[in-house]
Length: 130
Image (cartoon, rainbow, N blue to C red):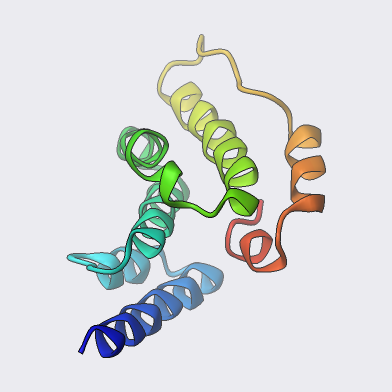
């Protein structure tokens, strides 16, 4: 029974990822509404929510989801992914916050994010691209 739940959750997340790649951010949010899965997928789902809100120019909501990811879900990411997704979330969180308050200092640089992406696992880079 648990295996079936995990397979269904992985399928639902995969459909959300396809919607993200297609630029259908409302579909991403709809697919992840009430999403239940193992902590790894919940962490990725929260970062997807942040990304979708950011790309919809809903910056306050994006900041909320980035903060929630960093505070409550980052530890659920595998160590090989954690460095990159942490940098990714902090980088884009600062950009969303700067859209709300232009005096917000920007975190890091795109060049630094590119360096970390070079050593991140392929799937992680594909899901969290910039």
